[in-house]
Image (cartoon, rainbow, N blue to C red; front, side, top):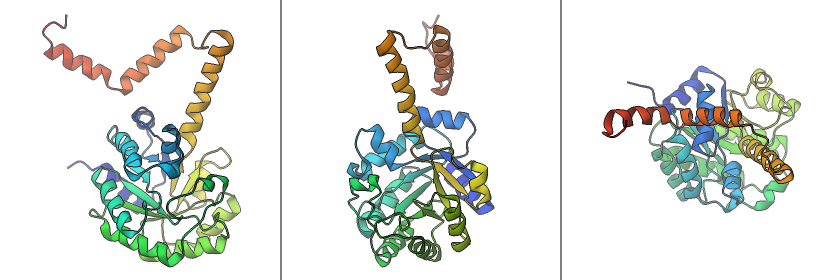
Length: 291
């Protein structure tokens, strides 16, 4: 029996394999990641909200799941998805876990920010719920899980939240570990000395880190003890940068700056990614007037 993407992710966690998960908010991005040989994909709230031209706090659970579902259904890789704050209280969190699991998602992270999330968190003004309230919510998330291979990640914003501290992030990370989550995700911990301290304090559980720039390499994250490395803002940053450059060139010069040979080469690659050669093969076998 073939190993499912969900089981593949869980096995990698168990064996200690480093998991690099570039971000994707659409099937084309997901196919590129798969084609390049990565072992997992991340679909985050920031990228999903941005590509819908709204902020993450305004997205509903079904909107996030629709974005992630299209990504997951387009590839054979495990997809880790942002579960927001469970989209409300423990009852809503249970429904979120079940919905993500039924959609074929491999893993979900749930955070301790207040719900509904505030747009001001983009300014670094995160507000978190009391630790007891968060642990209760996470216990219901774990209880709701139907398949043990479905990875549940506890995310704490205790480091970067208003009034937060390293001590608070460590306290919550240890509580999540002791509760039994598969992975702990300390959001906002970015500097090397902080990453090292967090790993030294929160032991015996895989850690997930958010990357997004070239300040720290995959090897450096790995050496510091972080097993899952996700690239959350990267797809919207890279895509918007490329499109803006191309269309600014068009606006200023009347040309796109992309040669005919480049267009042809890129179209060939795109058509491979969307399985067009396979469609041609089937059509040739089944369509009477193909020739």
